[in-house]
Image (cartoon, rainbow, N blue to C red):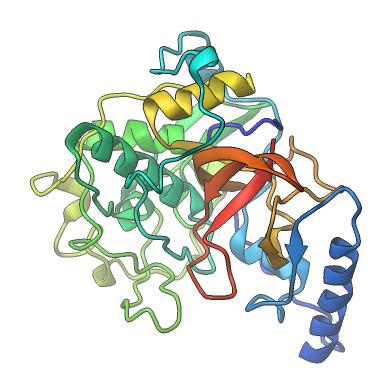
Length: 339
């Protein structure tokens, strides 16, 4: 199976002004045809609610800056000492799905910001809580966006890693934040508002960058329009500095190895896992095992939740991942990634 690495910036580049929306859709239709003609990819692609976005704009609105295969030191060290509960390789089932077992909460929509890292983190904590306590929570991703300013100067291939709100982040740092913050709140108390999807009924808020965020590793976002008074964490409720109503705590985290059999064993034995993937060709994915020919598995730009694995007669072995782009009829809420 292709490696998925445990883990996230938004710059919109509009299509040339001479282009009409019809031109963009026509160009995307040609791209869909090209993807469907790929002999190495058994997935089906189709125009959808993202059809009016050029691939460049789509990547800016939904994905994160590319991350290389060189992991930050903290993750490398964690891999060396990992003691994740696992299933003996010889006892691994041919398929597994934590969603069918009740450990995966409903699909959410991150909107047009780079907060996939927060949704992946929340999904991981939800799964762990279910396995330990038998109840499925909905964890507040908004808390992570508003409050988490974690930074790892050891970097990623020479660059520091940090949690940067709507501009990306890393799940391993988010786990450290939740541990140090005394827990994480429920979605019902602290709903997502930084980029609520149309028709969701969620109110819009304009959070500032988290207090103490790393300018070096996140970039300087002093010009970001924000209004802390519209938020529950940075505003009057002050939830960023209160854990009295937290519904789940984190005592630490572990990293899975790069060996795919060991990843499958950890998934079965420990629960859903936070991972990163290359999602640049996911814009028009509809069904099947996602495996475009032009896809570098080392260029990671999207955090998701690994929830299962299996085998498809046409596409072969696959990983099953939960996405955070909503559950619209035309968009699959779970993606099959080749193994």
